[in-house]
Structures are given as structure tokens and as C-alpha cells.
Image (cartoon, rainbow, N blue to C red):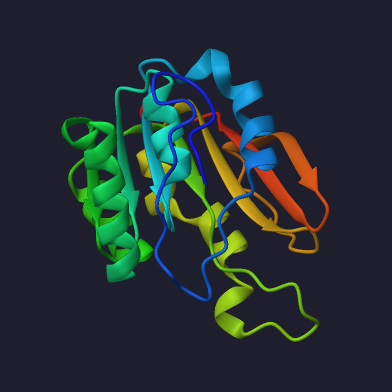
Length: 195
């Protein structure tokens, strides 16, 4: 896993040895950042289910103002913090070793606001996925707590299985879907929010 472009372009990121870790493929990130490039400089990013933190670190590399990473697995969070330190991004970042729901509540209580929110929740491509791997897409879309954190015209990007469907609330407008085999990243723009 490496940073694609920006000041840290080409630098490799360490990742924790976890059997259930499913990093977003480089080709997916390249396509995302190709279209996001004009929006990144000066933005604040929230990286949920961060894993290696590649999405948030890519934003920092391309001139993002700051990033918050949420990763509850202790090993992954430790490696993520190590990567941030090696890239010199510690001062512009924060790592919350917490469950996503709890982290969203905490950030909302702090009146935080983000221009880009990226979520790569667990999902299963099998015919019989576990219950905890089927509901995240819909839950994140419908979360009023997450909505309170997204700036007006901010983007919420959720990576999910192509068969996962959900109806977004009226304030979220589907702007684009990036499709890569069974993987989809849906990009929703906030028509309301903090502004």
C-alpha cells in the first residue's frame, strides 16, 4: 500500500497483519482521487474504519488541512499512528481508537466539521453475510450524527458491496458511483449541514 500522489507520493504504508483487513485497492483510490483532486487542498477529512489510513493520508499528502482517523483495532491503530509519524503528519491528524458509532458521537459533541468523509465498513460478498456486515451502508447514510459532521457541499464516500442498497435522506445527493467489479464507492454530496 502506498501514497499515490502529493508531497508523500510513492511512500509506502505499513499495515497490520489482520486476516479481516481489506484495504481499498490502489486502482480504486487512484480513480477516486483523480476526480476529487480539485476539492482536496485545505479540506478536513474523516476516515472511518480507517485500517491503514490510506484515504486520509492521501488527502494530507495532497494538501488537506487535517484528518481524523477512526480505527478500533489496536494493532491497526498503532500501525496507522506509526505511518502518520513517519510521514510527518502527526500534527495535522488525530487517531481515535474507538467504535465508529462512539467516535461519531464524540466528534459531534465537539462540534467538528468535515469536508470529506470516507467510510470503508466491513462487508461480505457471500450469499449469507453476517448481520454485522450488512447494515453499515444503510446505517451510515441514515445517521443524523454523521450528517451533523458533514459540511455543506461536503462529500460522504462509502465503499460497499455492489448488491448493497439503501435510500439516502433528502439532504444527501448521489453524485457518482465508482464501480470496480463487486466493489462500489458511492459519493454523496451534502445539500444541508454546517456550511
